[in-house]
Amino acid sequence: MKTIDRLIEKIKQTNNPTVIGIDTRYDMVPDCVKNKYSKDIDGMCKAMLEYCKALIDATCDIIPAVKLQSAYFEMYGIEGIKLYKELIDYSREKEMIVMADVKRGDIGSTSAGYSKAYLGKNIINEKEEGIFDVDFATVNPYMGSDCVNPFVEDCKKYEKGIFVLVKTSNKSSGELQDLKLKDGKTVYEKVAELVNSWGKDLVGEYGYSSISAVVGATYPKQLKELRALMPNAYFLIPGYGAQGGKAEDIALGFDKNGLGGIVNATRSLMCAYKSDMWKDKFGEEEYFKATRAEAIRMRDELNSAISKI
Image (cartoon, rainbow, N blue to C red; front, side, top):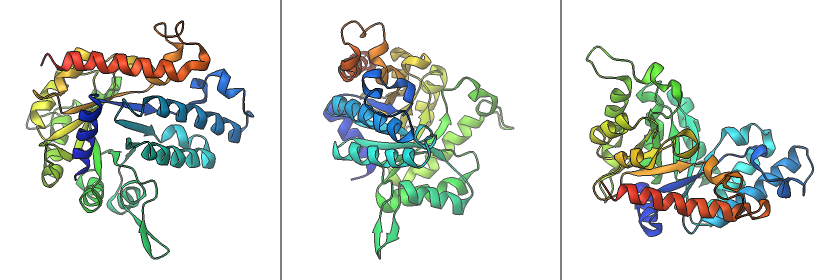
């Protein structure tokens, strides 16, 4: 089964088009967890491991996927990388679809190395073995096709998937992505065309390709345009919640069958215990219950908006 079909099946099974983002930021960890451990790197990583595992435990039956942002692991050095690997493996044990938010992209041979780390396999003890071994990775295409092709080849060989940055949710994305080319198209529209070509051989049973796209919720007009331009691309949609993306805007990225997108939320889920909505109902020590409650609220809000398409 193609990776995109496995993702869609999991979304349908949970009736939930969302992915929980995991950023290992020590300032997000509640004091009730921090105070169990030392304040050095080792203790900080142990606290974050406990915190993140509790959030995964609280949501793995209602959220289909987890997205682990590599930057927040790398910033803690070797211990952070070990933590990254441990949480990837733990998420897989919980039968979640695992996405590595790594935004890799370089000249062909270097991209091949990045792809092998996350999607492909290495020869170890004369056997092929995955290293981080995730289901999807995010890819930055702005060095052109030769930086993306190694990822595409590994997706074909190992039944994996990628989400290619097309129109991102950050405020300054338009400085480059909205520039007009000689033919009148924007840069992001040209990237959308490339995503279509890269993904044409990996379309699954639901009509979507394992080579898909990152399209931000903070630009609803472009989200709607890109849904039409990339009919076979599933959208990973960041920008919901803390970045200001609204459910009714996000729904523009979905098709008439309620498919086509998976919406990322990080801070609003990880820090739900701090929010005005949940902090009085759940104390700090029940931070994971607040995350579950917010995940259910988010699911229901999104499904309501999507159902009106």
